[in-house]
Image (cartoon, rainbow, N blue to C red):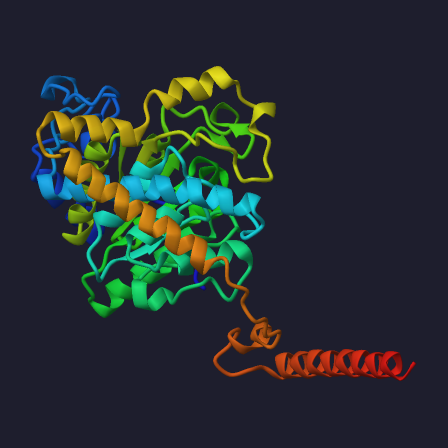
Amino acid sequence: MTISADHTAPDTASTTPADDALTEAVKKFGITVEDYMLPARHQIQMVDPDGRLIPDSEQGTQPGHEYPVPGNDELLAAYEQLVVGRRVNDQNSALVRQGRMAVYPSSHGQEACQVAAALCLSDADWMFPTYRDAVAVMTRGVDPVQVMTIFRGDWHGGYDPLKYKVGIQCTPLTTQLLHAVGVAHAAKLRGEDTVVMAMCGDGATSEGDFHEALNFAAVFHLPVIFFVQNNKYAISVPLAHQSVAPSLAHKAVGYGMAGERVDGNDVVALLAVLDRAVKLAREGSGPLLVEANTYRMQAHTNADDDTRYRENSEVAEWRAKDPVNRMRTYLTGRGLLDDDGEARIREHAEAVAAQLREGLGDDVPVDPQELFRHVFARQTPQLKEQSAMLADEIARDAAATQNSDAREAGK
């Protein structure tokens, strides 16, 4: 490496292709680059907690941050998935109590975020969920029983990620963002028309992987939507102990990407904001960060006691902002949902719940060799050795059991 003796400052006036693309994106809105990257001064909200459409002037918008109301068909489809998602959350909590699932991180109260994230993507797009995003994975089209398989410890994630373009849910915090950026980078190199939805919670924004993923995506100008579901707690740690930024969406500008914040219990606003984010990313505007302000109504998991770190009054305050009730009232008020339509949706939700009860009630034969079978396409010598050791141990245990049974029979 040669070190130049010329210590003059570099030419900061030169631009990169990413800079040029960002400038072109901003021209569409007639605002400055700074106003494009910074989130609107108030969160975007289109329907209030009472189910009323808010006047345009009160939706939190400003020039370059205006959003049209999504179409009726999209809203009805979202509401149906909201109802199904709520029923699934409640059913899974019951299955945990019955011992048919080992653990379940409920998204009760966050279903609007889950549904909107899945519905705004095309079939060719990818989604990388967190461990709490089972409803989003299901909304993406994955069989409900396959989605929940991981929560009772069966098989390798439960579904084929390549088939559904959905990364496997996993417990490690924030690692999925790196996977999402990698897929987006590969898609860009191949010239594919792919947008990636990278989902995380507020706790993930305190992790190093969050920084690395956002910085890489911005530098390489990748089509990624970083969707932060800010449910106010990283297990028991409140947001105030994680960040004092004006909002998590404001973190975007530090990486050179656009940020926006939206009411995470307003599915109408969520669909509007995420639809535009996906469109911008697909057009080459680069990555974007969307923060959804929502709330985890139930405990972190069935193993958590949330009464130790939050007050019942706080939970009650957010219960009044319930996304399912809000959307039902809005659709009914507009004449888009009647009693027959509601009954059909409820029947669908009950059918999914019954499917889960039946599918998760079956005992699955255990094959210990699956521990080694799907790690690499071609097993390493170490894996072959470990597999043989396990097979030998199982055989010896079986022989010992057989001998013991024979001795008992001979008495």
